[in-house]
Image (cartoon, rainbow, N blue to C red):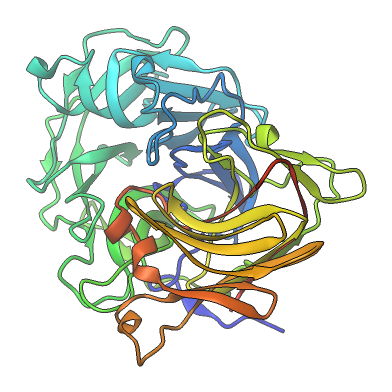
Length: 488
């Protein structure tokens, strides 16, 4: 059965927690990477031939030497990044905020599916959201948001410097460039050479409802910079549009010579002020150049969304690319069992001890089949989660919101237990009708709890991630036989 066509103005090309998109093209192939915060492996990377259908081909940061754990706190780890291709090699530059002394992190590869190199660090560039660009003579420019060497006296803002890629040092002192149009939090610089001008694209207004994209141009990378008279060139602030928080864009020229942009946005729901639960997702727009400035056409692309359903019996010798772990490593938590299934254990490393996959739909259902014991939850972070715990012959439904935890119901179980979690429409006769959804916790057909989905939203939990489904051990080692996820 064919899937219905949707507009890219209202539906993401990569759904679920995939923020801070960065894109590049090589021939007819497009590559897209994202920030991933505390989850490891980090920086998922996707491939496409048409900009609308994307397949994950790897995780760029798949070794702890590339992505040090640091304190492992929620919404720490890997922030905004830039993916580029230069002289036959891919480069990825990012910030690991959990490793403050490294500044910016640069890795490279000939094949974007991996393996990526050991990192080159740029310790003098302190801050977030780094960008790489090269001019005609091969000079590499690093731009970022923050300070130089952590010296606040020099000013916090958008900086740039000519970078020695081999050493991670600057060839000359860095300098400040365009600081934005005057909105809050100018960040996420991306610099491009288009015809006779350099363009500097920024995110402004914060990554919430005021999020916007602005741009300036100059004849040289150092400036002086001329702001676009139509700034912001993309924003949904103060509009009734169903997609909000639009910003953090990256431009790419298509194989046919046209232009496009990827950007992050959210799909809020529920009663005012409305709540978004999937995190920031990746959207696509066409771009036209008018009088030397980009004009975003959000409705240019229509497409049939990729199927998000999957089922995993873990018969493959290695975990699939979707599986990640917050503040730990998947191999510390899960071991494939010969013939299928996963042995799960507590890694004992101050992490939640969960193997996680992203929720990609507004309505969905998922089930985890455990033999004898195990836990299954939907979460934003350690303090905002609903789930089921199977141990000692009983399955308990539990919830934690901030500092409050509660047991909500229990049912006896024996042998294999089918733990089910789903996101459904709110019950109209209850106060939860004000939320974006209800979360249902069940064992087989026995419903143990129906909970307000607002409390698993970014507006409540804060932070930069989205809902994840996590499985882990309970009462010692556990065996996960099968996992399935379906959009509803």
